[in-house]
Length: 398
Ligand code: CTP
Image 1 (cartoon, rainbow, N blue to C red):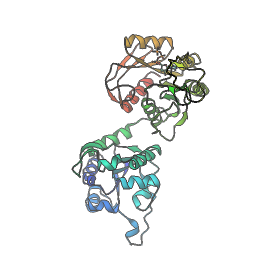
Image 2 (image 1 turned 120 degrees about the vertical axis):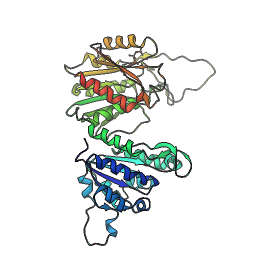
Image 3 (image 1 turned 90 degrees about the vertical axis):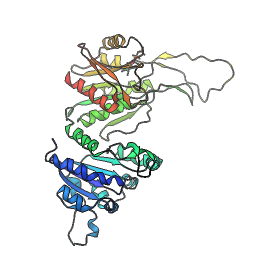
């Protein structure tokens, strides 16, 4: 599958550089055309000669220092590659990439890249956990780069924690996943909703829920990666990692989400309502901060509009509508009832009884039910993989 693919590997000065020759061997075995770029610091850990012999191509370290009089274009590799992988990438280089400090050929190539870029960080755990590093990674992710998460384990410093570069086999798997991603949503408009809604009580309080929005963000990213034009309507969420091609609309209340959904729904081919919309709202929020008096208070809440039911009433022919059902008992029966009552094509059932699944977890376990009665029982997996399963299920029936 990788035969003839053009991959640039960028190596920076981390101890994990010693693993890169193994990665190159694995890729060469699969027929990949490889070019290696190193920072000068990386040459302290692995020699350009070794990498050149394994990759069967000259290795670029710093053309400005070569003094050959020969011009090496620093943008050439950025436009040549189908994929760039920076591994290991140190805190220093992450900082340069995030801020465009192009003082070596590796960063100039990165800034010229026309292809997707994977980053495999490697550093000591305190450096990895430092807010500056975290912010730089967030910037790079929101610029559309993809991360190969470091592993937890023993580090070169003797400390133990997150910071170990992913093993070459794991990086190879990511490369396989990348090239096997189909463009099967090209030309489709997809609407995804995500996160909770907040219903105001006073100037400082609201009614909300524990949804973080991760499932919806994963669905939006997956649909965009498969070629869809995605609109993501998101309630207040701590997640900000979205593919830059996604149109993101931020809302706070159920009413705002309702209006945003109605405005775009006529153009949509697929709608996935993964937001945890509040069922009740407080119609007359108090001005300022509600003071405590020692007496009990009661709030008269009124129901919000059911966005999904309204969308199903306005549903166009051939539009696909999928909802989520969060249940704590009689899960399958209740989910099937929601599927029928809301006239959906799919309902994705989340049970509150499944451990490590649902609100606040990076993983989820879902049952995907189609209106034909066909059921796909999922296992606990990363929300990114659950998103793949949901999109696959929708496409298999559309
Ligand atoms: N939903 C919606 N608008 C609302 C409430 C829910 O569009 N005001 C959508 C959710 O996004 C989800 C589906 O309806 O896709 C089911 O949500 P869920 O909370 O499981 O069920 P409810 O319909 O709210 O019913 P209940 O809370 O009684 O289980």
